[in-house]
Amino acid sequence: MVFQFMINLLIAVIWMFLQDSYLMSTFLFGFILGVLLLFIFRNFFEFDFYFRRIFAFIKLMLLFLRELIKANIDVIKVVIKPRLDNHPGIIAVDTNLETEIEIATLAALITLTPGTVSMDFSADSSTIFVHALDVDDRDEMVADIKGSFEKAIMEVTR
Image 1 (spheres, rainbow, N blue to C red):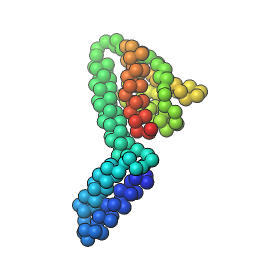
Image 2 (cartoon, rainbow, N blue to C red):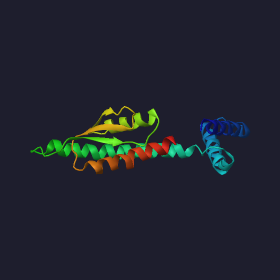
Image 3 (cartoon, rainbow, N blue to C red):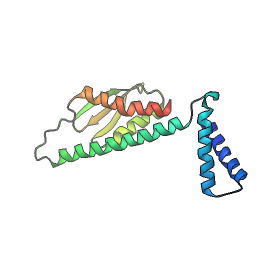
Image 4 (cartoon, rainbow, N blue to C red):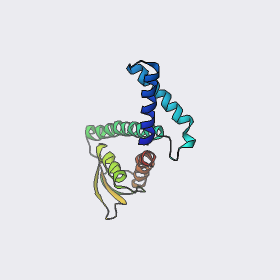
């Protein structure tokens, strides 16, 4: 990924020199030209096109923003209700993530979402214990975490 990015920067700088224009707009046009060239010749590289991961990262951030807004609304509903009828609970989320950075990212995203806190990990770090403010269905909540955050993290890192 870094190699492709460096090639893209080199193409942009060469474009600036060929145009004999050292403006930011010329650099950006050269950068976009480099992205297009790398995309066209992506089959000649031994690794994936690097913009795929950038799009996956943007998708992860948008997913987190959506979940953040939904969780804030849910917490507001719990706080505003005159009667406490929420069902707090601790769930165990078995994860398919392998590296420490993937697992830490998942735990951080869970903790940053209002109403949930990553409490602890299992000894082999394959399970994250999560405390949630309102757990109606444990299996549905685990499936939601695995289907959203875990899947998006795997798209970014793999």
